[in-house]
Image (cartoon, rainbow, N blue to C red; front, top):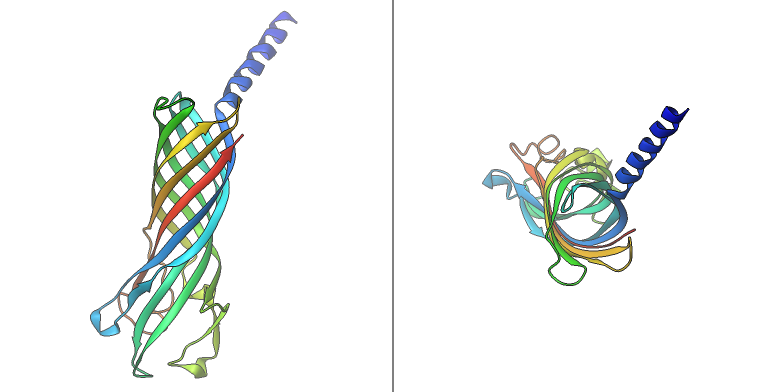
Length: 225
């Protein structure tokens, strides 16, 4: 009986210690997003302008050292931007304003400094995100009619992109402890898409070697409990 009690006590202490190493919070991330467009020059496919987006979600920091944590979570992120291309059928330049919604999981390492002021630390975050597009609009509509091929009818905007995406994430910010276990943080992050998400220009319009990749600059504001 004593051995069982001792084992339970050790197990409880271990779980308690492990729990103390995990910090969970919420964040909101307004951002400026754009699409990096590329194709042979005859198609004139290029990025025109960025758009304002909004994201946010759950933050989970698992500490494996005093100043080192594996940081993950689940996020909703808005992405997209405005692009232009030359349409041979209409003999004119066409514009698409693409808005995408992603569900993604960050897989990163977060490094903290010692206190630079009372209860205040800097953090640096490096890693990536894996996610997938869950919704999309072109020119504010869920459906799109190709001006150079109106006989084809409408297509779903979300079908114009490949669902999975992966990106590199770099971030720097400040974390301030406001209570025994409550912290607020703010930082800036850069997300650079690695995958070609185009599922329209090359397949439907015949633009050979056309690519679209996501880019995002975000302001991250959050609270950890």
